[in-house]
Image (tube, rainbow, N blue to C red):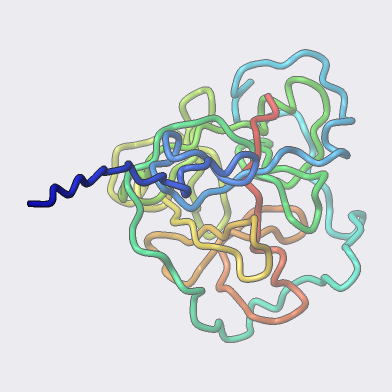
Length: 240
């Protein structure tokens, strides 16, 4: 008789490497789409005069909004025509597991030195100016209030970012179904930037957060070369 011995060897999981510096870890988002990158060099050169918490609010109250007339537009970008008929929404991934809350800031792809910043109750795209401004440009990203596969953004004083009249604002949660829907956004990959995301409204499918004249609002996504980048953002390490 011939004896045959079999030795089992564990299979290496070569796909376990974390995507360091590119997306939130699985522990942080449990597979969510929101990605982040480190702030740009222009942002890091902004005065850091001591960080304060996620808020003098992850909602700012100090920076003045920039006007459309005085703010330069990047080459090749112009104010989008909202009257244009929206095209079909970008392809979505299946619903992700409930993300874990984590502090982050949100940066524009075509204005990399500007971040979401709450000013006088509305969200603007501003440059960080000192520790208070940095804190007011920092939010806690949590599981969506009305859909745990999506996201909500909470300021340090407990307000949430929600759209009202299609304008993004920071307001207290009144517990209503409408508020929870207005404050929930689903992340889809940017069609133009591999490391950026677009944030779609739960209760207005096909409308995404975008900046216009440095103010954040909800608009239909338009596939044209003049405003496509206005809809894409990078979720980066917290400024404050």
